[in-house]
Amino acid sequence: MWPLAVFLMIVVLYWWFALCGTIWCGFNALMALLAAHFIRASIWGCLCAAGLFWFNQDEWIPWPHQVDAWLKGSANLVAFVACLVGVVKLGQWAHKRRQAKQDDPPSLNINFEFTPSWDMGDCAAPERRGPGENLVAIDRIGRRRPRGAIGTKQGPRRIPGPTVN
Image (spheres, rainbow, N blue to C red):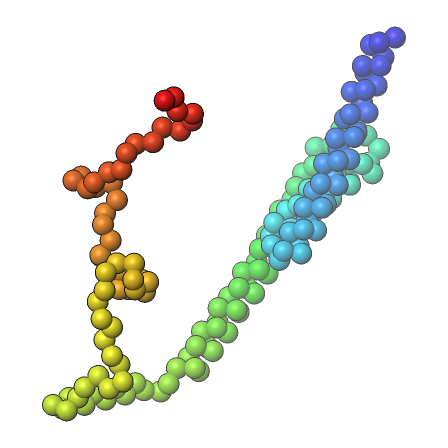
């Protein structure tokens, strides 16, 4: 009796995994579509359609011409979606390029006046202080002591865990 139970369990698991795989492919197709990944969504959709077609047929093992027809149809669908995505991306690129050309000024005029009376005006140079007093990042560049370099003072080494006195 137990060989029959093992056989039935294998058959039920086979159909269960096929159903779960079809549902998983359909869910991934939906999520990729919602994330605007259209090529990925078409691939997952073709795999979900293959599972649905397989469940709706009369034989467990499809004929080679059925698999061949599904494969050609899936490849055509994915190629069509890829072409559509490429055309849309090309249109977006052309639109951005046109917008960038319209936003540019027609010419660039830079006028400098070099006179002896030129000064900094209201811009006052900050005083240099010790490190840590002025927390502006530009002021601290290059003034910090290198960490772990040769010749620098190192603190006492600490050993993790309990210590014995």
